[in-house]
Length: 517
Image (cartoon, rainbow, N blue to C red; front, top):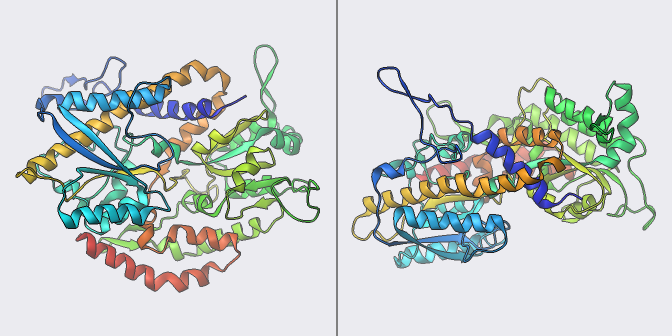
């Protein structure tokens, strides 16, 4: 029986495989001789902090974090029997040891339902000049609100900054997104395990897939993948869709076909004639996860201008392509083989084995503890002409910033530089201690899962993208959810976009003005 640990650690193993390949001749001296970058005992790249001989004399670093984060990330008080917990504990200890600081954690609820309360705590401290915090780590949308209201320092302008954007713990796709004009107010990456937990994926029930698509797959020439004893490892149907993913031909049209074929929608009789979670479906999800199809179609919400400005609502948002996508999904979701209500029953439905495919976040696998087998696919492309897959991030990942109202101890530039050292050390130690620990757990379990799932997670991790339209959602009418809501509730996207266009442009202009970029 698969468990949360097995598939989540598989995911993290893929991250490590992608991030620990280091070129020994990356740095070249003037005489042309290569010089190997510094690595730890396990071959993982190290940071550059030791060369500065940093010693902050036991300085207290106060971290305000969102206490209702679903997956552990911050304060760990003691060693336990949990390996990841212990890795977080060790990471915190290494930060304190290397920089000679003392981390002080203050937790405040700050998830989707507590954003305003979290911001209010910061606002109160800022106005009272209490200087209670140094670093702020919060739910992505909350951090966006804090930046807009002027509570976060511009990381780009800090003199003597220790943040090295070239290091592998800072994803290029995120850095490109969060750099606004010539400023940057928050960061994420390996520093936050939730960047991995919140990747959008398509899970599938192998038993249901086999029942409805094995014969077709065999007709297309696909055979079972078997071990040396003749036991089936992967069915013809699963091999077929994995083959699509490998070849780049996995599209939303193929997903629609797989999920709406005749006979898949089945009334199990608990409430005859009424759809409920006891019935059988081809696809299930929830509107805020269905956002993944917009991003997966290589469509942006907010992007840089090309006329000397800073940000604009992407031309994609009101494009004919988006109209077609929303219409396609609307037709799909009106099929009785789909369950896309705005409640959490979609997780239960898939967990109970009543759906063939589900659009979920990676960490939802922790809910699966069933006898039936399941696999994973990336979010499909819009069509086969699209070159790459694009993976949308769920909103509850953590962004890290430096509080603009921190206690300067009489020397604000020095204090700001110190905080960049803490952030860099935090991300670096997470990269080497937290992720590798989970990876080692996976190494003990890797033979329990197939290479196909490993490959799919590599595709997913390598295709992650970020969008300021999601991070600044609170101040942009939650624009990221509007296309998926239109599809689920069968509304016209042209009309929906038309009613929001003017206000969204005005709101974005206000954001840019408040950020002073």
